[in-house]
Image (tube, rainbow, N blue to C red; front, side):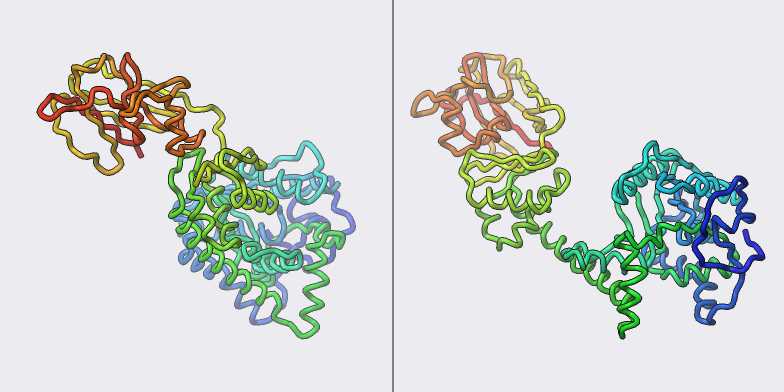
Length: 498
């Protein structure tokens, strides 16, 4: 790609054209030529591919042999990213593709899409282009639609990673934008180099000027988006007015200082997250895919500000973190809410207090159904059963010695001749009763006496025979069929599956 026109940075007055060829329409793109630049920029441009290669080797951002889809707007940064990756493709054994989304926010956007399509065709890069079925109402909606498409496009193109062209100037502008909005530490970390499950940003350490010099040195064309100069957008005012004004007023290194702030904030955020996760682990009494039970007294032992970090870290294990209002509401409830009460947060998350336990739950789409495991006779056997979605391994043996339970295991022994087979391992049902040494009691009352919260009761397996409940596993063994010294016993062991 290249042309003999003089390089120009003017915003074109018209971006419409009936014919589209990357070298014939300077009104819709910049024709880059090898022009005079400072020796520093020439050196920077000449070594950009090598520096990117070193960055990728040290960061592990892209693996050898990866399939990479480039988010290609056609602008300076994304064109440079695709070209740089093509330069390194042979040594890394990558497969490359591209994706372009037409937001329909400008009359010329369809022309841009055609230019990108032909740009990729000339380079032998597969490209998927899609046009929005509606015009986004604002920048935030446009971004949401764009990323929704880009993730779909990556999957269709077989991409393992989606590479976007954010660079160091974008990082500096983002940090200043968030600083002015009063962002916290995590916000000041700016744009992450990778965002799961697939987004990577290989150009983040490199500045716009050196990327621009790189394309100039190679004579490569790119599109200009006039909206990048529209000062009605806050980010553009920061880029074109605020930062230059501050730099001209004696802070010439502002962008680099903002970039450095993002690096320091990211490091501090990682430290806080690491310590928070460790503290959260120590508080968890029980956890599953849809529920976490936390020791309330241990949680309240932390400072109020720390509790907010802990709560958000715990909630993130079940789904999206609550926002500021949700976090504040949840913390107030944990501090003052009475046992047996609960609250609902946005996104379907609920928090309940049950005695000294706090339950954080996000209900699954389908409630787990209890299974039953039948022990048909006293002969030895084993099997699996799920109670409230939790798996248990059950083993029973006749005449086995009465040994203690192992780690994570519950065991009880019975006189087989006093049992009415078959036995059943199942969940609790309303109306269930158990005979204890002090008399028969409803299991619901037993749960209450032992301070087992309502939502926890369904997780206790029961062992029952035809006459009733023999054992509430992990809570109480009934008085019936108690073993006698020297007599035969049936031992039943339950181990919770991890």
